[in-house]
Image (cartoon, rainbow, N blue to C red; front, side, top):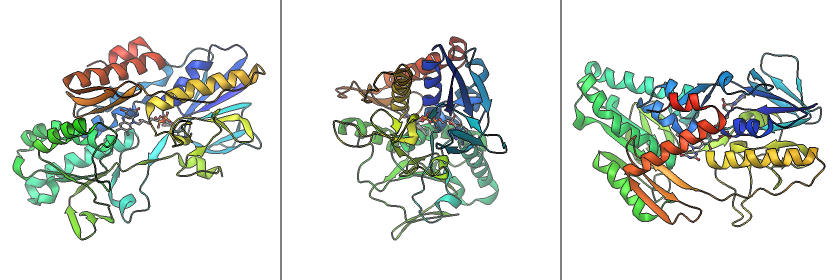
Length: 392
Ligand SMILES: Cc1cc2nc3c(=O)[nH]c(=O)nc-3n(C[C@H](O)[C@H](O)[C@H](O)COP(=O)(O)OP(=O)(O)OC[C@H]3O[C@@H](n4cnc5c(N)ncnc54)[C@H](O)[C@@H]3O)c2cc1C
C-alpha cells in the first residue's frame, strides 16, 4: 500500500481525496485543522450575519469515504527530505510516500503599519465570526457612546471579497438599524482600494452596475487610495483619514505560513511548482489551491487564487499522482475558466460566464447561479444530505 497524505480539507484537499479514494492500493490520510469543512467562498455572509456559521460548514466525518483515515490536527512543518509531516502538539511525525499540500490561504497585510494589529482579517470561519461579533458590539455600543465612529465601517480592499462583503453588509444593515434603533443616516460604509478601478476583472458595464447598486445604498468608494496606516480609530491614506471603529481587511491573501515554516522557496507562501503541479526535484509532493503558484501557459501570469482553480488543480494532481504510480508520464496543468461571479448581497450579483466571459449577467439570476455553484461543490465533495441541509 502506498501512503498518500493530504493536508487541508478545503476545496482542493477534499477534491483530491474524492479523486483518489477509489484507487486500489492507496492508503489515504486526510489531515485538517478543524473537524468541519467551511465554504470559504461564503465567509463574507457569516461576517455580515446574513448566514450563521452552521449554514456554511459540514462536518468532515460525514464526507469522508470508507477507507480514508481522517485526522484532525494542525500541520506545523513538512520535511520533504525525510518524507514526513509534523503536527502541532504531536511528537510522532506522519510519514508519506506521496504528499498533497492544500493548506489554503491566510490574510495578507503587506506589512502595512497597524493592519495586523487593528484590522479584522477574513480568512477563515473564526475570522468571519469575529467580524460579526465585533460589528454587532460596536453598533450596539453607539446608543451609550454616541460616538459616530461606532457606526462607521471601513472595508480595506475592493476586490471580489471586499465587494461581496460590502454587498452583505448593506443588505443586513436595516436589520441592525431596527434592532438597535440606530440613526440610519449616520451609518458609514467606506470601501478603500489602491487601484483606480473597482472590480476591473469584470466588463465595465457590470462593474458600473455593482458600484451603482452599492453606492445607492450609501457605500462610499475611495479608489487610488493606497493604505498607509491602520490605527484603532481609522485608516490613513496619504493625508486623508477615514475614521472607523470597525476596519475589515480584504486586500489580498497569501498561502499558509506552513509553507515558509518548512523552508520551501516561496513568494507570499505560494510555491512555484512544475507545470505538473509537483515540487521541483520532488515529484512525490504536490502543491494545489492557494498554496501553489502556477503560470498560465497562455498569458505567462500566475493563476489567481480561486476555489474554481483549486478544484481543477486537485483533479489534475490526482491524475498525475496516479500516472506516476502507474509509471506513466505526468501532464501539464491547464485551466479554462467557467466564468466569474460576484454577489452583491444574498439576492443579486454580477457574472461573466464562459471561458471568454462573453455571457454577461446582472441582477437576481446571478444569485441563483452562485447558489447552484455552491450546491454542486458540496454535492461533489460531500453528500446530497449535506447539500440539502445547506439549501435555504
Ligand atoms: C469571502 C470570499 C469569497 C470568495 N469567493 C470566491 C468565489 O466566488 N469563487 C472562487 O472561485 N473563489 C472565491 N474565493 C477564493 C476561494 O475561497 C479560495 O481560493 C479557496 O478557498 C482556496 O481553496 P483551498 O482548498 O486552496 O484552501 P482553503 O479553502 O483555504 O482550505 C484550506 C483548508 O486547510 C485547513 N488548514 C489551514 N491551515 C492548516 C494547518 N496548519 N493544519 C491543518 N489544516 C489547515 C483549513 O482549515 C481549510 O480547511 C473567495 C474567498 C473569500 C475569502
